[in-house]
Image 1 (cartoon, helix red, strand yellow):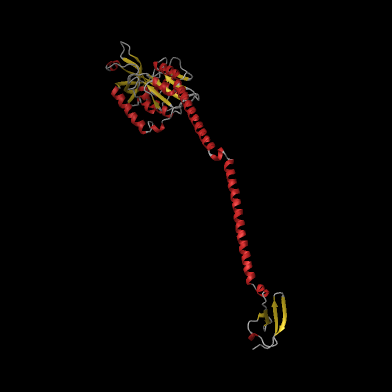
Image 2 (cartoon, one colour):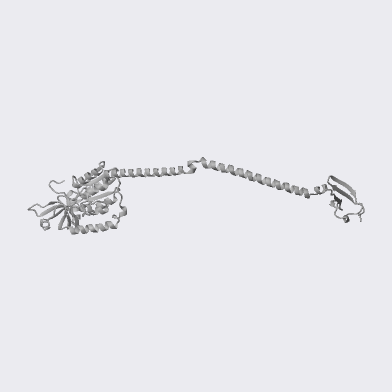
Length: 420
């Protein structure tokens, strides 16, 4: 060790170890050498914490990313800051041409600006329009991805400014319409540097809450710069990715930030949002009474119709006097049975008379009647032994055996010679 003398400088290529560490100045110098080799860069952000003390040649300000909690210190000549017209104010959007600088003594990094351009309204609108086309091409504005709001949400998430008129309008009007509505209010910045990160965090918190069925993002009217956070790409993509339906209620009727196009429902004002997220208890009660009356009338009408139909069915002869037709048919059946009997008896009597007449004719014309009148039937046997009626004397010869049948019997005879 040497007293009062600076240790010898180590070679720049020698690596540091626990036994041979680098001094702070060496590390700082190496970082400064590396940063100072970087070129200039154009940076966009929002200005905050402007420090321009009279009598100094350098102004200090902070440049913040509007979509993230990231900021950097910027230094610039006082004359450069004074040359900007209109003068810069907190929250202004700027584009800075600067070179990264590392201050060896303090060990801090900042940007040394040599040009600062304020972003005007026209440029802001042009950027919003370019972002509108980009998000529209990606389908974030498509009507088919819009979700319907629940008829009666369990809970309503509300993202708005603290003690703002928008918060008052939403709460008062919603509770006037449906007194039992439950709100989960998250107060955030609604303009300026912290608006986008706070709104995105609040949206994530409410989206993860199972008691929240719909989320309302509300703010009163304002200038283009005031409503700029609601056209931020990060916020628009967060709303598009949310699993809970989101209602946009930003500004007044003419205001139309990009959030209106991404949200599932766009309301012209916070008051309009309160009317859209919950039903009106009076209107719903009247509708219930109306539907109940219609149902009662419809039921009574149906019952009356069925009663008339039953009366018509009961008034029909088959139901009014079910035994009458059977009795009448029974009488008709008995009458027809009697008629059938008489017809059968008449037919039988007629047939019996005809049979008797035919029998009488047969009896009168039959051989028995002839035999009873004195006639006889002479038969002989042919060569085959069959009896045949003798019709001519030429059929037999003398001595032929004959059978003579008379009325009361038959006798045997023998043929003699025929008479001349």
